[in-house]
Image 1 (cartoon, one colour):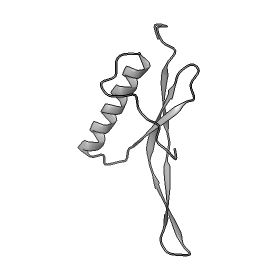
Image 2: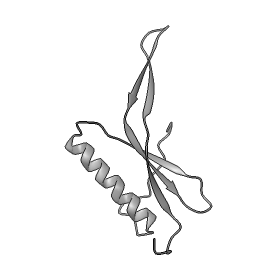
Image 3: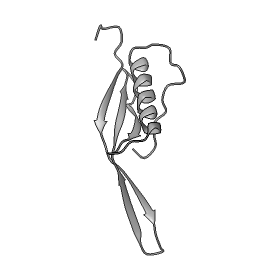
Image 4: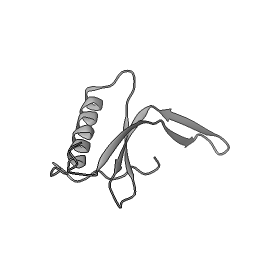
Length: 92
């Protein structure tokens, strides 16, 4: 890094688990493979954006990943974002 910014984004393998009520007495857990983009900046709490991935990604999955990585790179380098800074994904 050239020292121009203290912002960084870490890529962390992370599974997301969702609990679904299947009946009054039963709950099922579904687990999804993915990665977290963890945003760090001085004086701020870390925030995360979760991106799903699997063995057979679709074109839409690929486009979402490319967009997320591009936005992370722009944010980390303090470049003006093409959209807004990413919002944290709740429950990650």
